[in-house]
Length: 599
Image 1 (cartoon, rainbow, N blue to C red):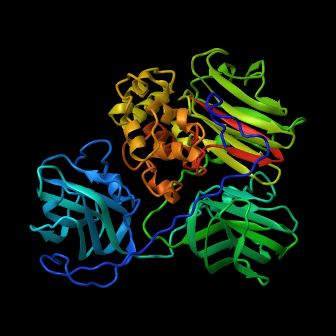
Image 2: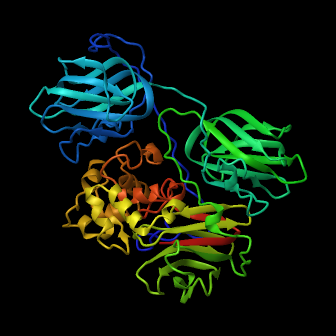
Image 3: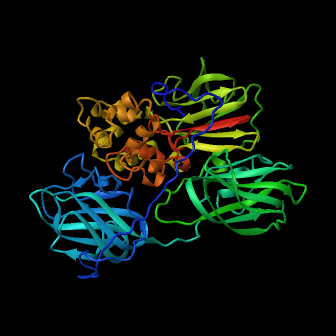
């Protein structure tokens, strides 16, 4: 879907489906080796079959690179036609982050002509060491070296001390094999987006069942069937579900999983004799979406859960933590919102922390302009594509921003956006009569801090190429990188992303990558992969958020807004909706929309 920036994209029509996530596949390969030296030695005799390939597609870094076409990531992309190559000096290193500690039993080095005469394989629990050597040689042979090793660590590196040629160190592939401890712990559902078939009241929303607070709860309408659905953010392997029921529990229900929000659903647990209380259910199944589907209530009331906990097995990659939606106090009293006569009621909230009174917080839509002191509500009619603008100080004040939406007769689609720039802190909360209740935009913590602090944090988080964004239009805006001359043709950083794009077969100018324009205008997946620096990985991994923005070159402007967004969802570039990472919200039967405007 394309909703954040009409210059580059078309707004999503009022009724459409969602893109389904791509599933990640891994392979295991068995090779040969022999032990000697430290804990091991050179490989020349048969060894036991290795465990899983852990390194492919994982974040990789190096002491240096020969050029933009020989990045560290090329050595772990599974493609023997791409390679990492270092500067022409000793020592050099290449390291890969496996995501969690693993027992390493084999390393395969596929050398280019420029190989290492002397090198070590080392492991560590930290990216900066200390390092433990699990293999060492001074007689490297080049070619393909398959090394049987024994060690444990999250980070694995090749540390070259003597080159065999006048060039650098160059690897077509750096493969690490081993096993990771699997566990059935944690809570993959905590603060993830939750949607329900209905809610009893505004105080018992779906999100209350995944907030980690056993004093808040979701409660449905008093009818059968009802469901509560969670979005884990990526495909996960479930091992256990814990349901903490309020007195209104399910006598008959199912736990179901799916790759898509709308199914099809696979049942991993079913009962007709639910007991209420705390039910700990051992399950086996995989999916991105998990739901409790209740078919028979045990009481005359609805279905009510204090908490819906989902435990998964982990084998390395984990999703970045998500930021919970703002608290109830942030959104104010939703019970007093008047009913809409058109499609839904919009209410604008002043969250400038006293910087501006309500009389100086303005909204503007379709020729109407009002301060929220005179008119905080707007009864939204049907429209094919619209923007609502917000200004501080005066109706034309330079401190401004907007949201985007399309509204059908019984449908709302919309989003906050940082595709053009950051102007004001904005957050939206969309509520439907079905129980849908989802918040997007900047976090409550971001709203709470002063504007100058946000600008400074942005600058501190940026690499050198992006730091000018914090000052070029300050204090009014932080423009997106594609909107500044530095990243356009002739600019200082015009080639920032173009070399990487060419190296993965997606040639495009840096400004076109940031703007998803030119050759990328019709390629959402490719544009997103380049901005997130995952285009060198197998395509199945382009939808894995744990791999996004792990190394340069990448769109660090977009990364900042994801890091400071509710649930990590933001629109930092036009196709940021690929893999469901954007701030897009959509529901039928909408009731009201809250828009918080901050300083």
